[in-house]
Length: 316
Ligand SMILES: NC(=O)c1ccc[n+]([C@@H]2O[C@H](COP(=O)([O-])OP(=O)(O)OC[C@H]3O[C@@H](n4cnc5c(N)ncnc54)[C@H](OP(=O)(O)O)[C@@H]3O)[C@@H](O)[C@H]2O)c1
Image 1: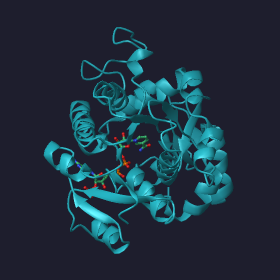
Image 2: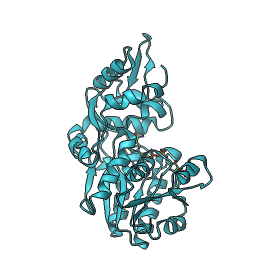
Image 3: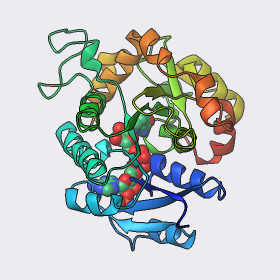
């Protein structure tokens, strides 16, 4: 263990960080060891990691000192923030700044920052194609991550900026699974028109991140994007129909309609989908599937992910 390079993993009990921890564990001779950063070392998920032999350390992204302590002696870190826990872009930026600062203080050699586009570079605040939200953002949970890139860069932290994609797991956990429409046929609803949505199995994000760490420092200072496939709503509905063995439709609502759905963050997600629909070339172009497979040879397609997870899709 002592000669292994330690990767401190934020969100180790969650989707992205958990995938990275499992990828490191699955490769015992790979030269890396995961250090799981959790808020509560006694939670069930933390105890499961301890049982698997993972070093589990208490840290809270809201407590900069705890991050400094938790990064001590590590080679690298996987940094991710948790927008959907609080819906605050400012809090995300504060947490990211604390992560970058802790990495600098400890002289980490390689940090992966899980980021997304600052959409204001494509749609400035005065551009009304997307409504401005909270006075300062177009897609708050994207813009905050993109804006936070600067903290890592300005502090000179050797960072790979990892552009992630829509998790297909949102069809299980995020209330986006097929729901019966007025004709009684299950439908997935997204304001993407006929645009392609880059998506990925959440588990594959961690595997790709592991691929980046394994390539030594080749991707330090670079922005890399990952996706499992780029699919239209109709293509995803066709895969649902095939795998679930019952018709599933794609309901392409307008972004205004989606923004008005009323659940917390609906306006943010409506803008997000519209951005992805209207800036296809840039958004899909930044997420190369062959490159993702190079990092992670077991990268899943949507259909293979769905087939493995079909029993976890909530019944419409
Ligand atoms: N859903 C998507 O399609 C998608 C796509 C791209 C990017 N994202 C982004 O992914 C991010 C979330 O990552 P995820 O999906 O991997 O998260 P997740 O599965 O929701 O898990 C997050 C984990 O982080 C830990 N955590 C939460 N607050 C923390 C804090 N203050 N300090 C330290 N740890 C904390 C929690 O672990 P403990 O309870 O053990 O501390 C939790 O298990 C969001 O910012 C979201 O915008 C989502």
